[in-house]
Amino acid sequence: MAPTILIVDDEPRSLESLRRTLEEDFRVFTAGGAVDALAIMQAESIDIVLTDQRMPETSGVTFLKQVREQWPETVRIIISGYTDSEDIIAGLNEAGIYQYLLKPWHPDQLLLILRQAVELQRLQRENHQLALELRTSEPALRKQTENSRRRLRQTFALNNIVCAQDSPLRGVCSMVERAACYDVSILLTGESGTGKELLARAVHYAGARSERPFVVQNCGALPDTLLESELFGHKKGAFTGAFEERIGLFQQAHGGTLFLDEVGETSPAFQVKLLRVLQEGECRPLGSNRPISVDVRIVAATNRNLAEEVQAGRFRGDLFYRLATLPIEVPPLRDRPMDIALLARSMLEKFATVLGRRVDGFAPETMSAMMAYAWPGNVRELQNEIQRMLVLSDGPLLTLELLSSHIHATDPLSLGASGLRGRVGAVEAQLLAETLDRHAGNVSRAAQELGVSRPGLRNKMRRLGVATTVRGRGRPARNEAENG
Image 1 (cartoon, rainbow, N blue to C red):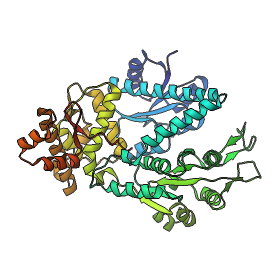
Image 2: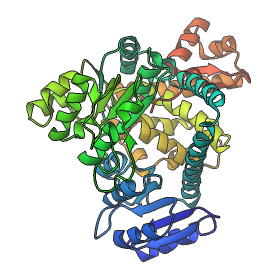
Image 3: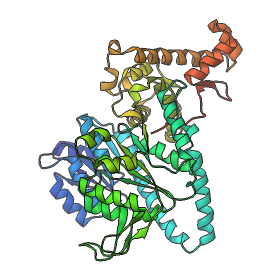
């Protein structure tokens, strides 16, 4: 049976256009507003919800928050003609959306994203089924767990994080590497999309608890009652709808690491309960009078300035100091322009392989525009933009017109010194790659053509992230993977 998708939009023409585009690949349901959409969700098994952000009766984010609470396995996507960063951040943090798409949408891009969402659904269901089957086979489960842990340690190793030698992220990675060895609480601060969860995983898999679970909870995604149930668990009948006993995330993370994302969004009342667990090392499930001992390392993250929140009385000082034994600030992408070219090329190579595209790289003017842009959505926004360009591209280079209009409209004259250095570096990297291509990767001949010494060229290649592949073509270095 074809996967099901529910399209929610108050504009009939937009609704009809989306329906015609998707009806060959999906079983399509449509609704003109959130009320009708919720009725359909109650009656049908929906795999994906695709909703407009701005509707008369409610916003897409508000609607998808309801969907998340009642049907958490449904993939949630917002499509909008507006580029309001607050809407995007709210969608990511509150509604847990899979993607935020901008109008006008391209049919091929939309279908690609939806097919990826269907694949995500399939993998989630297969993993659940596999987990049920493996319960009867302890040796197979143990072997799979060991293999998974080994792959995770390799994936989230700190040397896989892309950053230039002079990047401020280097200092962050050094601090994370030192902190991982000590069993102390860490508070990661920084804007959404800077890679805080990636660093939290790096802390876990580089530390002594790497053999135990790494558990994640976005504290801003749930109201207090549900968050308390998620973290501490509940007994059957503890509240309306508690039809069975639930083991909380503190218990699930026992011996390992619990990552509390957006901890600054919690209410003062909940902060008291969280502090008690951290101080006493035990939690009490809802409806139970017996505390349960837990041994958990806490890594918390927030995009708020918690020190200012404490001063304003919105966050408890004692909880702040309990969480921030070691505070680490993750810099936004606009403060590390020297990383943009490295990240972009690394992402391009990865996504070109995933999408089956053969692309040589970025046109110089494309890279210049990307270096000039501030990237308010940080690494996550850069990642989405490169995927978009790959879908829309036809030629061997990703040209300027493939960039979103608000990116290639950035005025280069408004750049500061750091942005200018980044643009010059991007042009230098492109020139080096092209010269190496002409000489089949021969560094000596390339250095002779460029009028520099061979060691000097090698140094530039390392600084700009350019290397030679086995086939001899100039390419970005592949010893690092992008951070997100």
